[in-house]
Length: 56
Image (cartoon, rainbow, N blue to C red; front, side, top):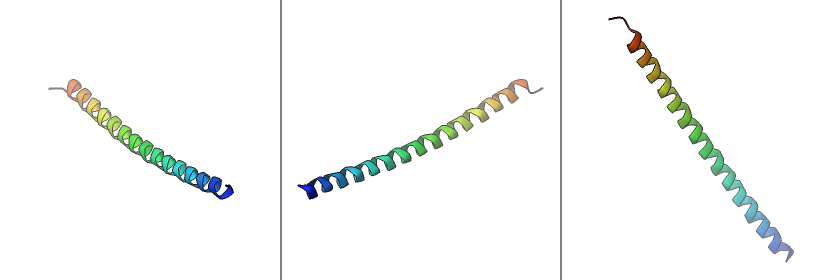
């Protein structure tokens, strides 16, 4: 019985570790995508303002 509980605990903790690693990877991917999209919007807005205010 004692070894069974230890085995269940080990499996549970390893599953939690895998889940945490997955959360970290997903968060990193989401952050990278957010930074890229924000940069794209910034440059697009900057270009639009430049075009709108450029002298002809």
